[in-house]
Each structure stands twice: as C-alpha cells, then as structure tokens.
Image (cartoon, rainbow, N blue to C red; front, top):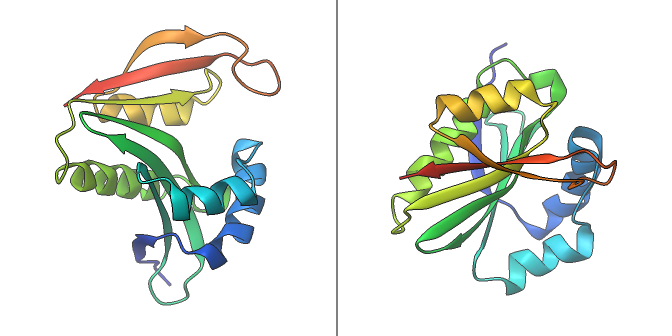
Length: 150
C-alpha cells in the first residue's frame, strides 16, 4: 500500500500527539502549552501536520514563524519509520510554496551537525550554513544556522 501525504493546518487536538513525536524524533518539545499558545495567540506562527490521505496516519510536521521579509523553520521532521521515502521533500516543497504568498527574502533554520540526512536535504533546497550556535541543544550539541536567500 502506498501512502499519499497531505498537509493540513495543525489543530488543537493534534498537539498531544505532536508533543510525543517531538520528543521521539527531535529529542525535545516546545510543550503542549507553548504549542497551543502558538496556534491561538501568535500571528507569526504557522503549524502544519503531514498525514496519510486515507489512513490519517501521522507522517511528520513543520512549524514556522513568518515575519515578512523573514521566515524561520522552527521544527520539521518525518517520523523515522517514514524517512527516506521523500516525505521530507514533500514538507520542504510545501513550505517553499506556502512562502510564495508572503514577501520573504530570507529563511533560516537550525540543525544538529550530526543530522547529516537533514543537512543534505536542506542543501538541496539552497540552504547554506552561515553560523554555528554553540551548545544550542539540551545535550550541549551545537547547531548549524542555515540560511536560504529567496
């Protein structure tokens, strides 16, 4: 059975599941209260989930802040069991298309230097490392700051 990914706005009732997957996939979460606040109170926040069209199985998510002319990817991931199937590209293509309705000239994101698969994907989309944020993650790992000029 092949999966057909669809992307939709995150709803309040997605948040419990997202918090669990955040911890599983990226090792931390903004937390339920923060994400709910982002969804309801932050006009710059845009949160989406990707799921299978027929089964509605959760495949991944992307969250971003858009403050024209800048945008930042807060979190993006595909669940490990669905990685290497092209779903990361689906999320990034969606993101790039979504930004077209805004006047964006730069997009940034942070990524762990150890996450080579993600780095290669971001580079494929024109992101380049511009800085290192030392001891950025909870475990002390640095973050690469990556930038894409639109």
